[in-house]
Length: 135
Image (cartoon, rainbow, N blue to C red; front, side, top):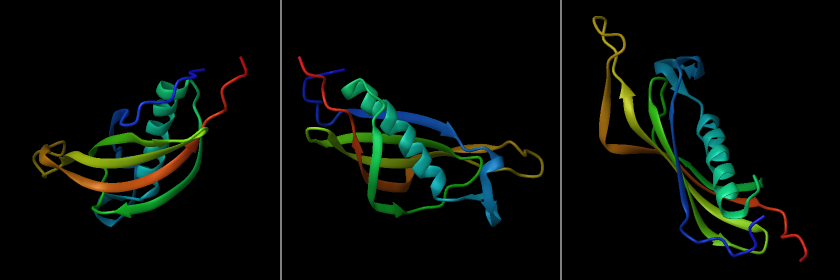
C-alpha cells in the first residue's frame, strides 16, 4: 500500500472497441451505462497506481451524455485525479470516440478515424481506498 499522498493530475487512459453485441437501440446506439462501466475500469487502474488498491466507487456526479456512442466505435477513456482526501479520491472522466464504424454495402467493415475525437461522455466521481496500515 502506498503511504504518500497521490499525485494530483495522475491520468490513466484505456482504449476499447465497442462490439456490435452492445448495440441496444436503432442506429446501433449503445446505452450510457457502457461508458460508465468503462469509467469504473479506468478508475480501478488509477487507484492501483496511486494507492496500491483497486478502491471502491462511492458515487458519480455531473454525468453528461454529450454525443452518441455506437457499436463499431473505438473509445478512449480517461480518468484524471483532481483531489485526494485521506481515503477519498475525486476523479474526472472523459470518453472520446476516436474512430467510428462507417460501413457500406461494399465495405461492411469500413471505419474512419475522427480528428478531432468526439467527446461522448463526461463525469466526475468519488472513489474510496482503504486507509494506510499503521506503522
